[in-house]
Length: 296
Image 1 (tube, helix red, strand yellow):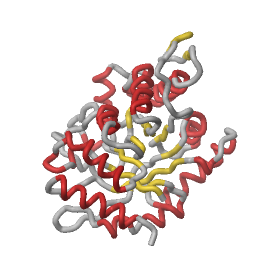
Image 2 (tube, helix red, strand yellow):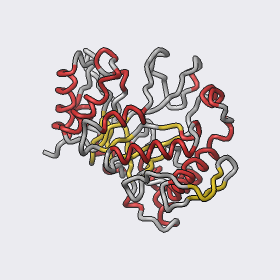
Image 3 (cartoon, helix red, strand yellow):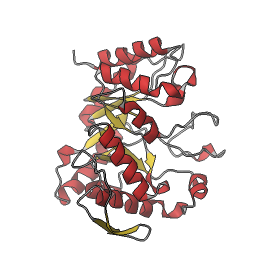
Image 4 (cartoon, rainbow, N blue to C red):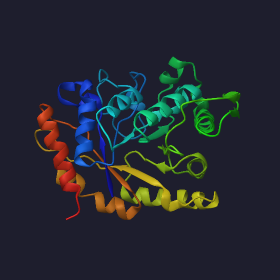
């Protein structure tokens, strides 16, 4: 199973978010498959509505823009996939998002791999003028439009919220198909979304048993759409086991990997880099994770 470094910038040493490219270079050197973290444009006070369990982030935590941070990492990496946690696609104008991702793919010479979802805070949607109750249809419109803009030129697309006709969107991505992961519940409708315009699934805080059950819904949808279910990227987050000093207990955290792999996961995300005192300490932790994950 491949390894991804889940790397929230505000969890870097001294909460120095400018260290993200440094962490990306270290993960690249250590052989990680990808690096990623998620998006929030803003955080509202009502974090008790978080649907995946306790909200563990401070209200003053910094949420760097993932696409800008990943673009910065292109300059110091050569192999690692530049991914994301969940980018909230409905909050972004489709043409702007398509341009940003195409640019990231060009700058990285074909290493973009982004994950998308719909979010859970009405306040984020209100702040950018998007109806919260239309978030799923906006997700569909936005990502379908991105696929159109990354395809043959000139491009045209029409939906309730996005329209363009005979436009040209250059540069095109280097990859013939930019991988798109969806962080959605594995309902039949969401499985159809993955089968139509996605390439993978990245559930949040799912057990191995939940991952296996979800794939029992998603894989048949892929087959029905004429796509190979074995091509799915399935990224899961290893539940963190921490030491008394707040650092990751690497071996106990990675111990769940085989169970996730048997369930059908293809990428195990480990992190963030909690408890590191400085850059050297962070480098040691990243290497320790990579070494411990290697097959014996």
